[in-house]
Amino acid sequence: MKITILGSGTSVGVPQVGCTCAVCTSPDARDKRLRCSGLVEWNGVRILIDCGPDFRQQMLRLNDFRPIDGVLITHEHYDHVGGLDDLRPFCAFADVPVYAESYTAERLRSRIPYCFSEHPYPGVPRISLHDVEPDVPFAVTNKNGVSVLVMPFRVMHGKMPILGYRIGRMAWITDMLMMPDDSFEILRDLDCLVMNALRIEPHLTHQSLSEAIAAATHINARETYFIHICHQMGLHAEVDKVLPKQMHLAYDMQKICL
Image (cartoon, rainbow, N blue to C red; front, top):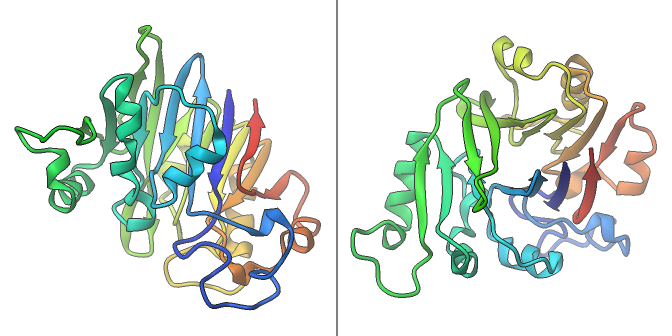
């Protein structure tokens, strides 16, 4: 399995427009963070997790134009779904299935209705919405008939219920403040955990770094990579070196092989 961190930043990205702090003006490429998204490749199946407004730029950076077999949506916020229209080049291979909770799917239909109309006009991305539920696994299948099992699970973005996803022995969690005990049970025996850590200070709807470290310690994955990072986290080089063993700040275009 290969996991590519396409974007490790929070909703406004890093650098933040108009900010001249040490992080936003850092020359270190690891301090330049596009909106949060990841690509998981396993047994020839390619799965995109979230499709934010930087998706086009992320795909140009990746420079690996091959089919996307499924898109997993964690929740409806724009920084996680704003790039769905940019899936259209990938529809040259086949229609792209998008998996989301019914609540999220309905909001996508209302925001970009032209993508889901009964008679779409030419050039519209051919994407199909599929409802998923927490704790109910489903398969993502490539054009060769190879399938990968995905397990969605519940996490809480403040008071908003959203989804995390487990694929094999890795899991992806973003925008979480806390999760129910049942979800912790789903995350046993992970080789890789990718999870949000917004900043040092507490936040109303996202984990702080200390909260993320506590949750990661409880989950006890072999390696943990923190994402959805804002400029208030501090410089990558300084924060990463003081993290507990087997925990890391992720960075854009980082590749993790399992």
